Image (tube, rainbow, N blue to C red; front, top):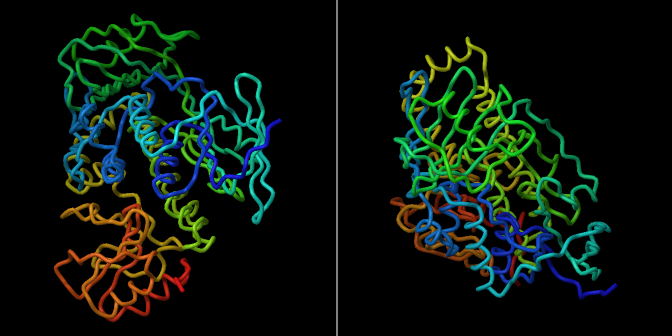
Length: 494
C-alpha cells in the first residue's frame, strides 16, 4: 500500500457540498484533495432548487452568473384544490436581489462548481473511495485509507477531513456517529418529464387533493420535476411508468395536461434525520452525510452548500494560525439549529400536504387562503423558502458582539449597495469611518480588512464575516469591546 504525504484537508464526496468545500478552501489558499467513489459525475437532476441565500453567496465567488443563465426562475408558488387556485406564495417578497427560486438540475450545479474548482487548480479524483478512517485525537492527523477502482490502496494523513459522502456516509459510520431520526410513512413518486398543458412555467404548482398531492417544479421548455404522493400504491415496486404518473396527476390536478418523455423516474420514502453534532474530532460532516429530510421546498442541497461556506473560512483561518481552534466548534453550534428548524418545518409541511384525512383536507382548503392573505405570513414564507431568515443569533460567536437597530450579531447582512462586493472573503471586513474603532481594526491586520462604512450614521461600524453574517457592530465608543471580541476568537498579529 502506497503512503502519501500529509495534507491539510481531505474532502470525501464530490456532490454540491464537497465541491463547495473544495472551492472555498482552495480559494482561501488551503491545499485540498477531493475524492469521490463514482467514476463519473451524476447525470441525474436530483436536487433542483437553488435558493436566494445560496445565490447571494455564490455570486461573489464567481459561480452564480452562469447558473442564472442556465436555470429557470420561479417567482411564486401556488396552491390549488377542488379545481381552483387557493392562494399564492409570493416569492418576489424575498428581501434579496434573487427574489425567486432558480430551477437548475443538480448535475448542472455540480458541473459549474467542478469547472470553477478546476480553474482554481483542483480536480476531483474519481473512482476513489474511503475504506478506513481513524481519528487519533485532537493533536494528531486523521489516518485514511483510500482504494481505487483498479485495486490500488493508499494511506494518507489529513489534518482535517470533511465528510460529504452522502446519506450512507462511510466516514460517519466508521466513526460511529449516530444518524437518529425516522422514515416517514408515505410512498412518493419523483420524475423529470415533459408536461404539455396550461401548467405555469414560472411558478411552483402544488395540487392538494383528498387522495394526496402533486407538486410541479418548472425546469423550463415545458420540462418539470414532479413529486407526488402515492397513498393508493398505484406504483408497484419498480420505477413508475409514464402511465402511472399520469394517473397520479389526473387524480390530484384539475389543469388538463399530457405527461411524457421522462428523463428518469423513481419511487422513494422520506427519511428525516440529522447527526447529533457536525464535528467528530478532526472530522466535519456536512450535506446529506449530516442531514436528510423531505425534498419539499427544495432546501437540502442549499443547506449543504451553506454548511461549507460557514465552515471553510473558519477552517482556513485556523490552519494558517489566524484563528484559535475553538472557532471550529462554532460550525456545529451555528449550523445544527438551522438544520433542526428546517427539518421540523419540512416535516410539518409534508404531513399537512400528505394527509388523506377528509376533515384535514377541508381545513387546509379553508385556512390556506386566510393565512396567505396576511403580509406577515407571506413575508415569512418567502424568507423561509429563500433561506434568508436563517441566522446564528445567540450562538457563542455572536454573544456580546452587539448590533445595529434590528440587525444583530449572527444575522444575515443584506447584500445592498454592493456591500458583498466589498467583502474580503478571506478575512473579517470592518465597515467603519476613521477613528478609534478603525485603529482597533488596523491593529488586527490580516484578520480584519477595513472598508468605508456604507451606513448613513457615520458613527456606527459593523464587522462582517466572509459568509455574509454580522460578526459584531456598535458605535464609536465600542473599540475596546471589538478588541476584546476579536481576542476571544483570533490570534493578534505581532
